[in-house]
Length: 310
Image (cartoon, rainbow, N blue to C red; front, side, top):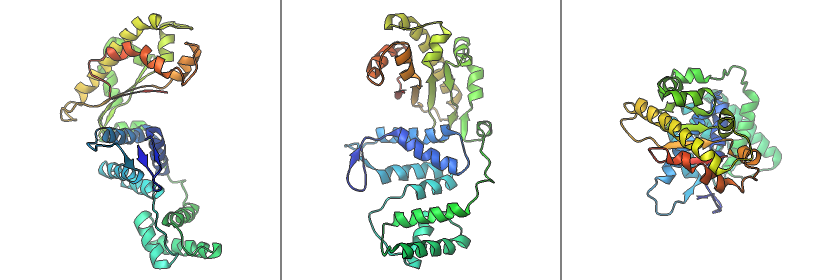
């Protein structure tokens, strides 16, 4: 559970956190969402493994973890973007030059040449609006408005996944995994049934995507389907997924210092599968779908850390 500045609690949503991280990556010209996914998974993993008796955290704690991970893994510029986009505070300040300047120096990555100019614009805007004091976040948002108005993103070139694969931030690349798979697993990967992502140094983990609609097409299965029909196919698919996991473990063993990597299995098209091939409604059928794919999960030699259906 998370608590905000007003004491309101809500369930931690890793997808929402990932969206905020992705926006920071995009602002820096990096378009590969798997990097943001790594960080949100790292945060979720840390929360679940926390020794805190009651698993209740503040938004500030979450944001501090994200910023620390970004800095530790060589993304200080993205850490600065995320930090200034996710600032929370209850205090109020006056729009006085030295106060505003200190605030912006702390929370914004503005160079010294532009800092005084943006301070002047924010103070003038506050005076024009009749604002005598306000939450620091309001002045920070005004500064970001003036900063973005003066900033052109035409010089930012998106970084391709191929470039990241060659970077030393990857412990194991996707291509290296594909070369080592068994024939059955490689066949499902080439058919688009199994999709893999390399192991990054940002958050070493094993991530497998299983496309269940592609899986049914691969075997010529049409709806309406039953659990009994799917069961033998899912057992064999589980063996292929397990080969992917053991292959990644073997390739990452040396770089990950022999640690057991958490395993994430995602079935991103389960909702459409439920509607089209089970003739069920979603999300009402989610629990039934989890039971249906048990043969696949039970075929794995190591337990999953997280199974995500969407």
